[in-house]
Image (tube, rainbow, N blue to C red; front, top):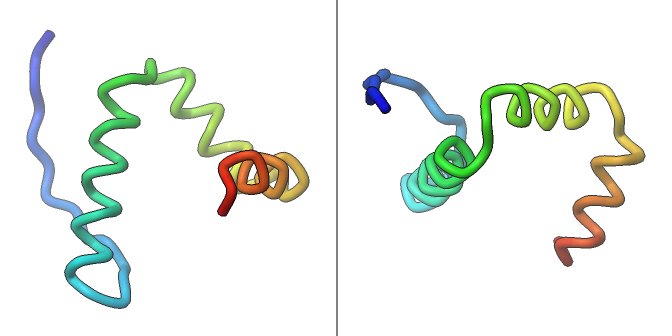
Length: 60
């Protein structure tokens, strides 16, 4: 599989938080297929009930 590099900006309260977000995004990108990530992003943007249920299940 090819690797691609991108420069991105992440909004966060601190650099530590930004690093944590980037690490989590990297794991998600490596473990989920593009269609799965696309569906996840769609749900987070458009379905607050499912997003709330997921947060509850994660304990956050």
